[in-house]
Length: 126
Picture 1: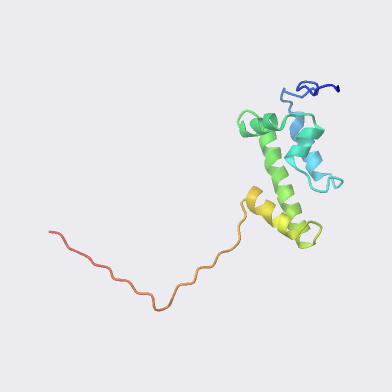
Picture 2: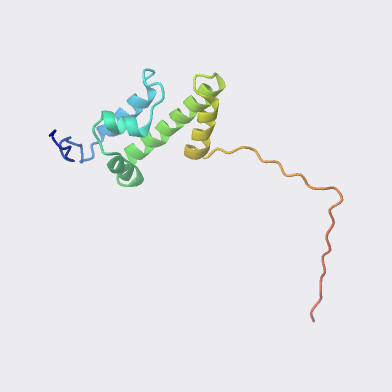
């Protein structure tokens, strides 16, 4: 029988370091990372994704990381926009990620019928 995988065999960085903010920006700006993600950054820096997200959410406690994360998400959004337009990425997948991860949405136009009418009744109370 083979050895069973045990959580804990892989050491993880559990203590916050200010250097993570700079490392995040370096990672997201690196042109060798075709499509940088927070999850990949966490794996490459041996940080549990839940721990990293917790640090980011604690923006007041870790402001440098919160700022780096905001900048990293702007970089990722720009890569999706350009990559989708230039077909470096699948346009449908780029659209999906922009809608679900970056708050973008399709423009929805509503048509109002010209003959639509309504009545307003105003009662004066003494």
